Length: 400
Ligand SMILES: Cc1cc2nc3c(=O)[nH]c(=O)nc-3n(C[C@H](O)[C@H](O)[C@H](O)COP(=O)(O)OP(=O)(O)OC[C@H]3O[C@@H](n4cnc5c(N)ncnc54)[C@H](O)[C@@H]3O)c2cc1C
Image (tube, rainbow, N blue to C red):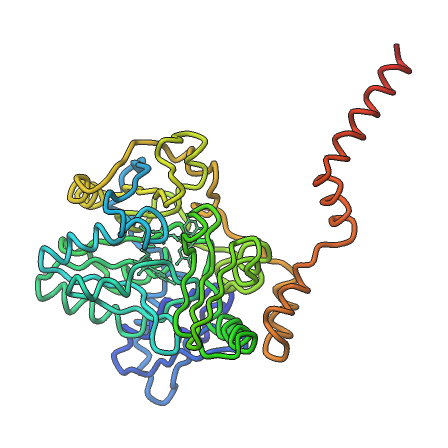
């Protein structure tokens, strides 16, 4: 049974086991950190082993359709609204729109009424709006894999967008290639604990003395490069801080303090990829193709299969894009294949996060050591460089 076999730190919470179970005897239960894991009801279990067979941590998903070398383009949508409202260059919404226009359905992540994130499908252009944008916490798959299969068997085109581990879980669940299925993943640093995110919202609600109306990550008000967290409160107030000052993004990027354990040794950040297309932010684009960076978002569009080529072809008339290479991605984005490090501070965070104010705790944990602070100040005033120059001059004087 899956809950006895899978190592906790390897379970990515993709819900594949939950979806495959013929007797519905698997529940996904939250642990103290707020991440869900399978729990099997032994009385109802018929020991068919389907849950073990489908687990992407225990059985590698197929990469048969992958191109030997992925093709990379740097791109953005010519539809200004789509570009600015999306997280990167608006690639997802362009592909999703083309699938809907062909009568298909699109699965992706949306916020629910509690501001938590869950997978859901849209079959209309209006429905797609909720799927736009990156939501920086783990999305609950729920019964989405079953729904994907239902639509595939009806002959509809299905686009499924999710994390690399969602894609691996779905592929194992389906266990065969469907001509009408298109898979998009993204370069993924890792997913955040929904409970940690709730603690963040609670801290903000206390500070602003109001309930939250809307949350927006990687908002472009101050530009794409400084991606900001924006929150609108019911009392009309607004919070907006960029990646250097927002505690949530700092905890995610500088810590990392609250990632799912499996994200620290992700098995799905592989090349070749399991998906047809991998999307990402083209950080570093200003160094290689400055004309493609207007600080409004430029995407990595990585074509991993023939179907990926087909998707790029479908939307190419709506894009500005140029070919580039995998090497260029690493200029600013190690998340393609490298997992975020596991830090001691993560353990400290989860020990205290339910008892203390989120913002205070993160600020305390990320406070640099005294030596780091001195170095930073010296660097700031360019004193270090000056001292080095002076020492060199003295050395030169003494030697010659
Ligand atoms: C948790 C997370 C970590 C990421 N880490 C990186 C990174 O390290 N480097 C990088 O270059 N890019 C990263 N991205 C991807 C990046 O932010 C953009 O989503 C991507 O470039 C696509 O942008 P877009 O403008 O085409 O579309 P967008 O409109 O941003 O589309 C986002 C798509 O992702 C799906 N999605 C959103 N949130 C989630 C979620 N929590 N779980 C599953 N699916 C979701 C949506 O349904 C939609 O399909 C990450 C995204 C997420 C959600």
